[in-house]
Image 1 (tube, one colour):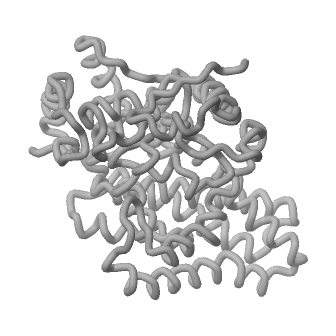
Image 2 (image 1 turned 90 degrees about the horizontal axis):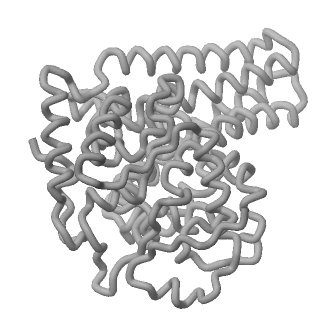
Length: 383
């Protein structure tokens, strides 16, 4: 079968190396007799998480406990809701949840059910981040469009507020889903800019659908609780914010530490608009796996922590990623290819914070960084 990384097009200057071809061969052998998709176990897991989230929601509306108890239920609801999305919509986005492409498309709309535009998110994820991670011009996850308060890439212009980003980044991550709900989806539609593409023929008819789903999400998340609960309005809003902020922080942190950390490369396009090297090797040096053998962490994050392996095998369901990460590490060692891995989330967090501190400092020559054909910028880190 043709692997997604083989379809690299003219963006990269080299074809994929023998390391990658051997890795793919061994992965194909490992999957002999196995499905690459999630199947029934993944569906049951997603439905179970959705059931808990819905149960918490109706328990809150029934006011089965006092304010503190309802607050705790809101936290559980938010955690289960977003873990449900990570364990269904993300894999469905990569056609990895079911064998059926149609059913994967249906589960894309799990994003919409929790207030996030599935269309905008899918375009940004597949047509930007997965095209070339850590390339400022292509990967919106490292640009300042999505997170203007943070400087993650050396090519992003330095602003005075970036000097404290290593202190306030937890707040930025915590409001990530709120920003997506209320700001980012609408801004991208208004700009008609999605992923790496300016303008999209589907944008015009997608707008009514996006607005309809937004109205649905605002109704169940804010309108109904404000109209039904006997609590003061500010307590309802606090519960709504808490539902977002705790899982939002954990999700954003898990994603960020896998490709925004020390030891990873941060690149820019060549003068001819291409990227040096092969697509497979680009993913090897720009992503990392974090605690890939932690079953609990993989279960909670839908395999986002096994990020390097996910980028090498985007069509594979997340439940297979821990096993595949061992295969990636083994083949990389045999071929002398660098394999980035952090054994724990705590170690990855420390590396991430040190990178944020390095990016908080004003570069000595911003124009040189901006004009360099390939960024492999590793500034001295103040510890």
